[in-house]
Length: 362
Ligand code: MTE
Ligand code: MO
Image (cartoon, rainbow, N blue to C red; front, side, top):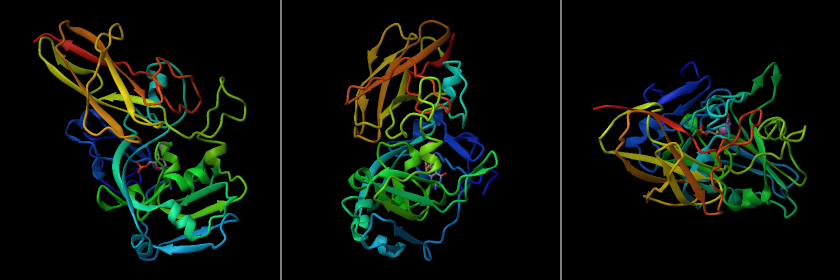
């Protein structure tokens, strides 16, 4: 593994490394189709990628919410009826650095630009299937998966292994215990042998390298739903807002930050928009810093819990610095705002991004 504890190579033209994490570069997305290939997918690790041997690995299910606690091996999971689904995984902190660069606010945490997201085709067993085989009881309220990666220690505090409860209703609805990513066995960095894939929810819910799952008839908690991954700050109660669940609406251009364009030349500007709450309904683009807007035609697959690609053409006339803006609306009617309310950890930045470009004479 590299110094970051990530196993796969991270070429600097494709990734920006942030300590234990690596985000993909949007300016390198031009040749990436709907699915992000495994070697291009962002990695968000609290500590480092563990190497887990699928042959000896077992998934242990335990807790008061099960009438038949039991464990499963890798081959047993592979033999169960599977589902395959395209789902985006996105970090709750994606876009965090924009609180600072665009809103001039201080936030703590990994300074992601917009590359803490990717869409892949996941195959695995519905979490509901294994929960039912372990006899999940009707009064179960929370389901908490725990990773096999090293314990997370920050500022001298040992928080234990990454774990975070999700409501039983969500766990039974559409969560996948995934063992394949884009038709290959899960790579080590993305959770080999098995991870959760929780559609629409913050990436943290999609626990990697799952070793055990606790199912409880009373609410469960961990530092990841008490101290982290809820809103703290002036606009929120002292104990924080509710634990974060779904992602908001966001958009990005597949262009370098501060791209240089030549006046008088036609450009095809491409981008993608996504939402944790359903399909993208509409994308508008402004090429003049927000003064006028045009609808961007959508292209390719258009499904919930993924992203939708769009494109506009532009022949810049005037030289100088310009801002390109994209504003998406999802099927619930949620529109990207012009400003995101500040929170101390910089979660869920969903404001319209002002993407700077410089136009030079030809
Ligand atoms: N699972 C474990 N066990 N440990 C982790 O550090 N990081 C979470 C989640 N699952 C994490 C984890 C976070 S915060 C995100 S955003 C996603 O994994 C990132 O998934 P990826 O690395 O496959 O892109
Ligand atoms: Mo995350």
